[in-house]
Each structure stands twice: as C-alpha cells, then as structure tokens.
Image (cartoon, rainbow, N blue to C red):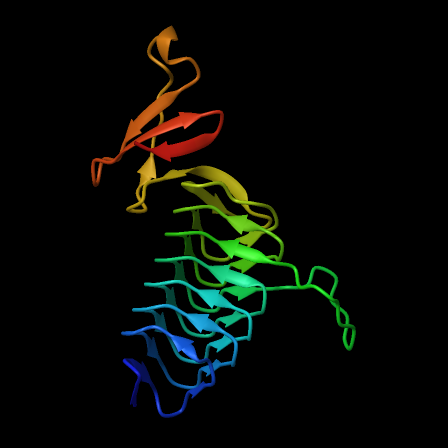
Length: 198
C-alpha cells in the first residue's frame, strides 16, 4: 500500500513515524516505532528494524537482515542478504545493560551476504566487506576485507573496483602513493594506510 509517499507491503508491520519518501518496505518486515528510515531506501523481505536504528537515504537492506538499537547506517549503504549485526558484546538471557554497543556503517559501504559485524565498530566510507566475513575491529575508508576474522586484503574505489597503489616515484611525494581507478577514473592518495579520494 502507499502511505505518506513511501510503499509498505500489506504483510509488513511499520510503526516507525519517520520513513522517507520513495522508500519501499517489502513483505514480512517489522519496523518498530522509534526507528528512522531515510528516503529512497529498499528494505527487502523478512527484515527487522528495532527502535533506535537510524538508516540514511538510498540504503538497500536485502532479505533476512535484522538491525538492532545502536546501529547507524549512513547514506547509500548496501547490506547483503542475511548479514548479521549485534548490539551487545556481553549478551546474557534476561540481562539488560544500560547502554547498547553502537555500530556505525558509514556512507557508501557494501556489506556482503552472511557477513557479521560485531557491535562496537565502525565500517569506514566506501569500504567493502566480503560475503561471510566477520568484522571484529574498525574497518578504514576505501578498504576491502575478507575472512573470519576479517583481514585487510586491499583498497577499493567508490565504484567498488580494486585499486592498485604503486610505490612513490620520487622523494618529493614522501610516503604518499597515488592510484587511478581503471573503471571510473577517480584518483586516490594513500598515506600511512589512509586513503582519500582526490
């Protein structure tokens, strides 16, 4: 059905009062009161979004994902099917903590199918977390991670293609290295393990 400029499938439960225009919420989703969802999002079948979750604009959440209080998803993030998020590093049945452990997924991140993001970490801008990867520490911007636990395997462009950083060609650049994406032409600078898009 149509409701306030966004689409809700007849089987979905949407109690949230803040859902942006153009967002689509599909079958058997449960969006709790107090969650916030931006514009032009796609929340696929069988997703659960708990109160306190913040989802930015242009986010895709594929089937079977649960987002718990304390998870913040910035704009244009892709979350693959059955990815797992947590919000309690020391969980016990019937034990409630005063504060949840927060997780931040920054702009443009892609998280692969069945990946796990353990609470209390930040996944940096445009990083790519491979399918089945288990994130147990912060992930820097523009980096690519695979495995359990997650291991750094390279750098990625905003368009998701791998980046190759050759060694500096002269002493004037110091430790800086530069790369151009072969797919889209964007240019990047790498200094001390940190990548910036020029």
